Length: 208
Image 1 (cartoon, one colour):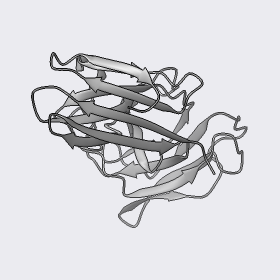
Image 2: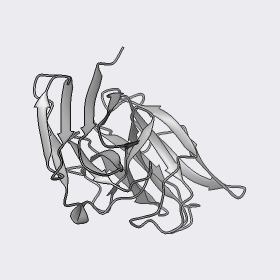
Image 3: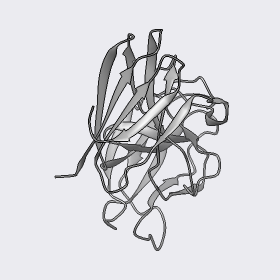
């Protein structure tokens, strides 16, 4: 059983907002990968939301068309993955009989522990679909699918929190998010965050 993480968030601002937890592609290894609105929940002023997750990875894809901020990624196939298991850290992505699909099979010749591999096969049309990885049954990162391409994702989870107007799976432009806060899980699995009346985040260890 994977360790459960929790983040308890209280909206003490003066307005209704969507709370959004996301990850940044720090040293991810896929240059054009974009962050997704990973965990989201609406919250009125004075209310508290608790997000929970575990480090259970997955391969995901969606037929998004052109991938850009504002597009919503809705996974059409989710396959469990494990970067620490060579039997479960790679997959193939193909387009057959008019439909995209993941396939079992080696993605690279010598996979390494700690990474997740997607081999995009020759039949994949450019700029039609998006592939990526997820955590705890929700997409975290996505990149435009291209034919004959090997993708090597090396996740180093860093958790960030923001508030505003967000939809689950929305492609984010993390450079444009100004009201954000890092949530460091250093030796703990439970963190709390409060958005105060000045829209400033206060982060602390433990539950509220």
